[in-house]
Image 1: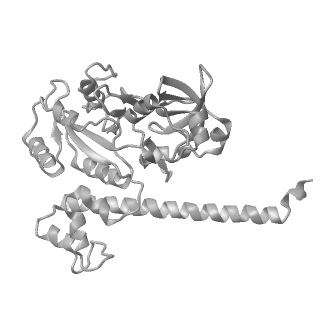
Image 2 (image 1 turned 30 degrees about the vertical axis):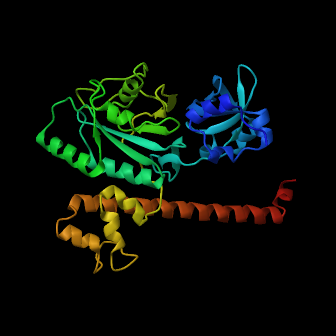
Image 3 (image 1 turned 90 degrees about the horizontal axis):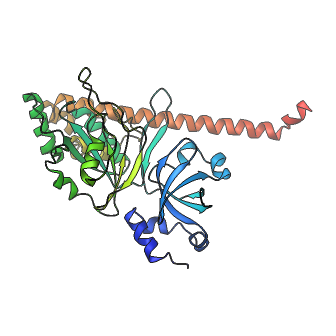
Length: 361
């Protein structure tokens, strides 16, 4: 088997290369094509980082017209391309280890991939906009669905806050091990830096204006990602990051900056393991009297008992149930769409068998 050159491997390892991706390559692919990781996806091309820098690449025709939208390269994907000097042609998108996704906004029931091959998601909330526990719970559930580890930051701790926000800040720090930081003043950035490891991939997510780009700038110290001010009228941040972009930190680690998102529409079916976002509800559910307990009116439901005794708040219970209903709706809608697709395929197949083309000759 053809071996990849050591200096190339050093670069790829810093980008997050692993045996998982290595095992999907043939000796011929290693010999004849260049391995790279997608840093930015544009309308008609991608920017791919490889051992010699970066390259603007386009999809080969069979991929452009043969792949579904979610199968096409996304930020964080590993690809193979043929180098033609000023331009590269992507011939293969390697299998993904995982991907961060959400449900598309609007009425369509579909998955939108934000980034792929992610080890950690850095969830950023900030005190100036205000902490949002419900949004945090939703994000944590989706990250668990996507098999991505969370790191929670509370930014702009140098700003004065109300007693209510101070209590919520303490709650999130205690129950979710959130790190309070100030990107502007550098407070506690060392605690975040200690979690950024060479060869691991980190996607920064959060609402507009929470300081994602500012935090990445502070981590790199020499970066200059575009940042914006929060509107004093609306207390909302401007969308200064307009696309998903991947960077290699000089200190180690790969980071992906993303545009602000208000929330994540859930894209997985309901199951008990997603309950870990609700500190303890998942463990309680395992001890319910019935294995298929709906946690609504069953006798022997440990969750209902915890709500009644005040161990779990009404708000947390309602959030837990609402997210479960959303996941169930997504799953049922997805299954319904698959069934309709199968029926349509069967109709077309039968029409072909009946010689429908001859009717128009």
